[in-house]
Amino acid sequence: MITPIRCWTCGRPLGHLWEPFKQRVLNGENPEKVLNDLGVTRYCCRRTLLGHIELINQVLEYSRIETE
Image 1 (spheres, rainbow, N blue to C red):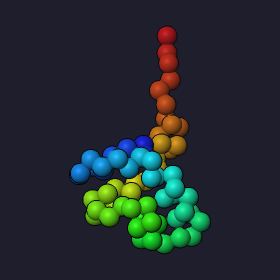
Image 2: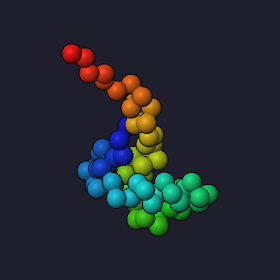
Image 3: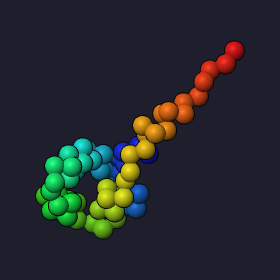
C-alpha cells in the first residue's frame, strides 16, 4: 500500500528510489534498465520495487467516519 521504505528481505533502503523508478517507467523506459541505472542489483530489492502496487488512494476512499 505505502511505498516500500526498505527491502522486505535484505533491509536495503529503497524509499528514495521509488519516485525516480516510477517516473522513468511511466515515461516508457525499460524497468530492467532503470533498475540497473539506479544501482538495484539484488533480486530481492528488484522484486520489491517491481512488485509494488500503490493502493493508498483506493484505501483512502474507505476512511473511518467519526461518530459521536
